[in-house]
Length: 401
Image 1 (cartoon, rainbow, N blue to C red):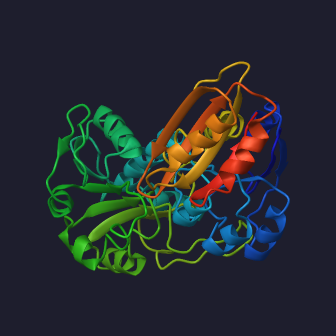
Image 2 (image 1 turned 180 degrees about the vertical axis):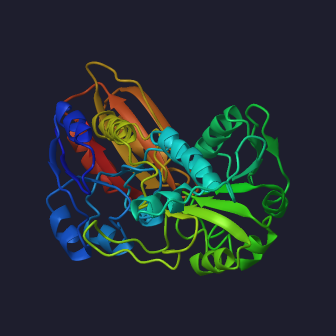
């Protein structure tokens, strides 16, 4: 049975097409609803798709615990209370790969732009000022680039930068395989003091909040450049503004901010505005047509596989589980607290009904277990689901087909 799906924030229309092609009903809106409107709207939907501005808080989830799934049509999932979603048996999917190239290309462009002071020269030319000078303009070839966070995007930046002749260094809390001739460094401090350009590619975590403060900026080489296209909470903006005014930092490119306007109609303000050789962009790292199409396809594919077949592959807050489709079987799924005996209780219910299990797969994490069961009976599947869902440790049980 098709589900009712709400897509917010002008998610690429390819997502609507992909979901409707699988039998679901989709409404696409071009804004982020506030909390009250969101709670009211979700009464009429089974699934919601969001980008970065729509906040799915514990309060929202409490009022919308009936949701089957949440799709984040972006990389980040910090706008969703993942723990609360799991408690209600709601998997959350995102797009960890789709905008990698777009963000990496923007970073490379900003490295060149900062090295040549293109932002200021462009502004002056528009004002009629002929600012032809080589002072402060340098080639990027042979310079040292430091990448903080060597994941999907950081490693792509590494490959592109090396192709342009930069010497690439990186620091990551986890051990990562260097690509090309990139050199891993043992600490953030070592990277900051070594490199001419520093680009940040870390997730939003308690450990990355205010990761770059006045202290870290002072550890950077005098005359170096900082690029942040990761999360707005990673850099203390006032400290960065001070370091630029003091000319310790020669320039910066910032795409993400601690506080961002809710829509294109709202005013944007930042302490970095008006500073020399500072490039400010409105969170457009992944805003290319190619990336948005790819994100729409990636997340809608994850949602389709979950809604139609129960697959949680790629879910960020759920045990990842996938089971192949079996013709002539009924399929039900169950989320339960990860405590001993639950699988036995479920199988006992099925056994007592005299129904054969055609396939069964279980995956667990610290808190929950997720189970997919195929049975060879069409008529008994809803009765079995009703019995399983009232088990004391059961969270949610659904019949898929």
